Amino acid sequence: MKKLIIKYRTVIKFILTFLIVYAVLSFSYKLYLDFSVGSKYYPDYFTNLVALQSESLLHTFDYDARIAKHPDEPSMKLIINGKFVARVIEGCNSISIIILFISFMIAFAGKFKTTFFYILAGSVLIYVVNLFRIVILSIGLYHYPWRREELHTVIFPLIIYGIVFLLWMFWVNRFSNVKTTP
Image (cartoon, rainbow, N blue to C red; front, side, top):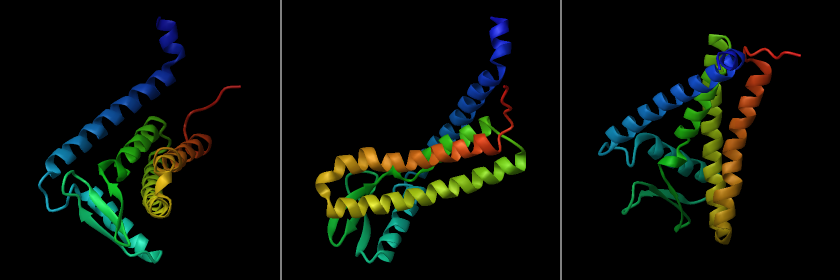
């Protein structure tokens, strides 16, 4: 058993680091969500911000968009040309995906400065791609409501998780400290 642990030390270190960072960040985010109930931002600051920015982006694309508090659940209703097309919920704000990205990056860290700036740039990129994902999804739902399932459960998760995967692969192949053996 000791030989296996020594042999796979880097893999075990990666998994443990990933799990610990993921658990700490997820717990911190859960605390944030618990304490944001009743704040002036509904349902929470980041979800509210994503809804507002999605509305602004839709205006940029010449859609008459507005957001409104959902009366029955903690979400923001996204309305295009008077038609309710989507809900912006906590899961739409990309924070959980950014936590996943950061956990991987710390577990696969390179030099501190490089890792820090890559995490920062990658998180911003994920956030921006997520905003465009919501806008494109909303426009798609406005024009093609019968394609709701394909758009929301296949195509758009593929976009957001695809960008995270590409960022990870770029990092591992370009900047990580892990050395490959021939």
